[in-house]
Each structure stands twice: as C-alpha cells, then as structure tokens.
Amino acid sequence: MIEEPPAPEPEPEPAVSAERIREDRAKQLAEIRQIVDEVQNAPEPAQNFTPEPDPVPAPEPAAATTPVVPIAPVAEQERTTGDPLREKIDGRPKTTPPDTDKSRKNLMRKHSKRARKRLQNDKRGNGLFMTGFLLVVIVVAVMVALYLLAPQIIAQSPGMEAPLTEYVARIDELRGGATAIVGNVRDTVVALMGLDKEG
Image 1 (spheres, one colour):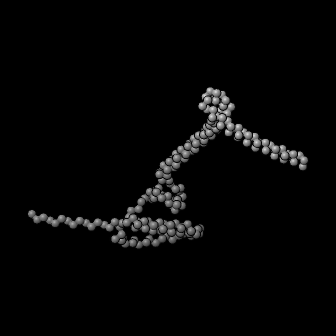
Image 2 (cartoon, rainbow, N blue to C red):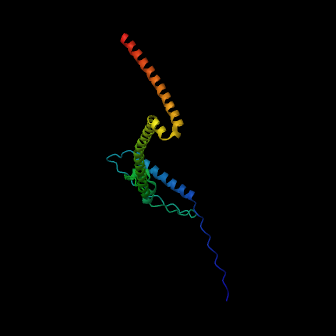
Image 3 (cartoon, rainbow, N blue to C red):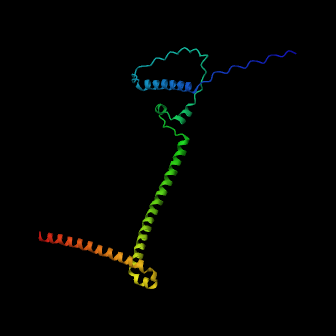
C-alpha cells in the first residue's frame, strides 16, 4: 500500500487589523455625512419639475485581496455610540445604553447616602455643641464650688490646705484685676457720657 503524503495546510487569510476596520468605518461615515449634507443643503425643487431618474451605475469589480469586513447592525451602533447624525436623519431621540440606567441608579444611591451622612453630621454637630457647652458650665461650676467651699474642704481634709489657699489667692487676684478693668471701663463710659451731655 502506498501512503499518500499529507495534504498541505491551507494558508490562513491575513487578519484584518482593528485600525483598518476603523479607517473603513470612518470612510463610510464620512460618505454618509457628505450625502446627508448634500440632501439638507439642496435647494427646494420647483413645483412643475420632475426629476430625471438616476442612471444605474455599472457594478464595480470585486477586489479579490480586500476581505469583506462585517459592519455591526445599525441598531447596535445606535445603542453603543448614540450617533447624533443618525438622530438628525431619523428624527429619533438618542437611545440610552443599558449601562446608563445602572450608573444613574448608582449615582442616586451615592447621593442619598451622602445626604443622609450630612444630616447625621448636622444633628451630631448640634449635639457636640451642647456637650461642649455643658462641659464648660460644669468645669466653671466646680471651680466656683471649690472657691466658695474652700474653708469647709480644708476643715475636712487638712492636706488640701496648701493647694486650696493658693487657688483661692489666685482667684482673688483675678477678681481684683477684673474689678479694676470693669471700674476703668465704667469710668471711661461715664466720662464719655458726661461729655455728650455737656456737648
């Protein structure tokens, strides 16, 4: 038995690059736009004018080396690109891709979360103000109580005598300074009012 040699593998057709496909589509879109511009800018036909039929062009010979590149259906192009030229021709509004609805919902969800956080922060901010205010009032009340009750505290615990007497002395100094400032301000105001009455 004679063995036949294996059949040679067919040579693969050259792959069409994505750039070539883009160039072909760009040419097609340019031709379509040119035709649309011609139609839109054409003068209005006269009432009695009947257009002559266009001559049928001779079929062009098919190029053997250029492979045919399938073009996506028009509906797919509209859905993915939202071509404004197509909207102008058809008079249809641009269709929104399904991803737009999902992203719109995500944006709305994020916005509502931010709004809720802002409201919570506003409420918490008012609570923080009240907490801080009450804290200051409590500290001042404790300081006043220590000043007023210093003799009773010293009688109860003699070890606190040195710090409490120093504290009371400092508070008395501050009171004296504040009294002097208030007196100066009062004298200045009285003097100014006296000048106003004389003038």
